[in-house]
Length: 343
Image (cartoon, rainbow, N blue to C red; front, side, top):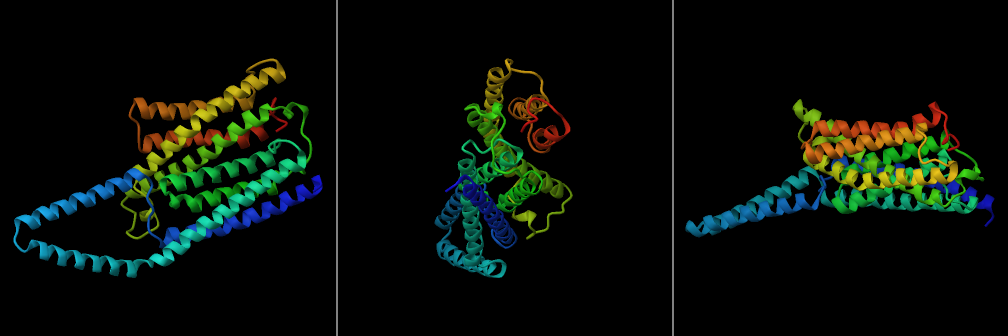
């Protein structure tokens, strides 16, 4: 295929990706609204299983001490099982729940595959790493965020994040296509370096992971605020989210993964700057705000590990760092001029 054909294929796959993500978002929303709350971590599932074992053991001891208790316990268990089945029938149909969940994840994976095709075909069309301008960079960040969500979904069963992750991806791709689109072509000589595959790739991966952590933090703050006001109705959407502690812990785990990668991106960027411009650091606006973002996340992790911060205070600090990350991408590129303005 010619470069023009590959570029056209990339654009068509972009439309396919957006459509799949939108439908996946709706399926995730249906699952969130009508399905059962998924687990957030294996530790939560283990604790729940241990609690059931302890309850069962206590019941067995009581049955051994009280004649006829075993029969009564059996009858009670059967009665309880019947009540549980009735509750499932009234509140949700398990098969229907699974259909929404499976449909959402399937569409998500299909959209992820099309999204990967967008990046690969764009790269093949321009014969370089496909993040040489804002359109390509934002497209890659959206892909990294969706990938990070799928990893979190697989590792922590965090299906509740699906609708929000898809919404963020659709918005990002919409902005990329409507306001930031550039025709496939060459880039300035400074970007024709192997460092773009190292430095920029690390920044993309870290930004995608930070985005997932930011979503979890926002949901934590929303639920925590509603709980403080006793405004979380039973059976409402917020009640289907995990406990606030689980949301807080999920945000921390993803941030701990992304922070070293962001650190490496800054260090490798400094090395590239020395090769390209003859100096490691020039306090360029992009460099400055990348460092401010690093300080924000470093302060968040430090506060949690040494000062014992958690909950609302830690979440606000995490959100401040995430805001700095977003400003570093959007604000710096359009409000300031500097050595990175070509991006």
